[in-house]
Length: 134
Image 1: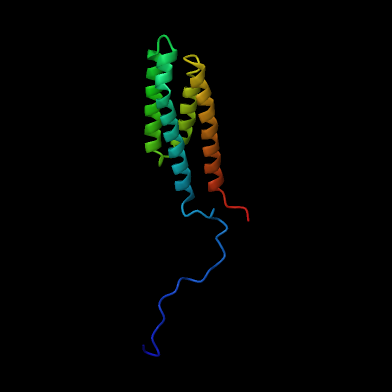
Image 2: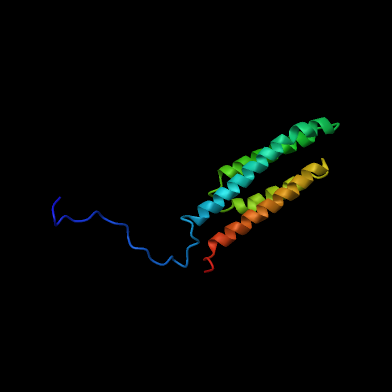
């Protein structure tokens, strides 16, 4: 080994964190991923509601059609989570699920639960857009 060899390039020395960053590499991506996961779980829960609705209701056609349409809307919105308009569209979707209350109270209750989940996701998105408190 030569005496005057250059050392390997080291990492840049540590500096104070940028006060305008949340600590995540891409906070907007984290919020979009959270929204997509919430919508995916909602789609799964709605799909799982088809069989009980068919067993409970005398005329399950309306509930089944509503569930399939809402599930497709969840999947489409989850797939388009990069778009800024999915946040209000997701809120409209939650209102549509709650509006299924007349079909069966369980659908409305699921809508309320997922509306709260969606509100939390939107809250997280807003918090991640702000600089962190240090």
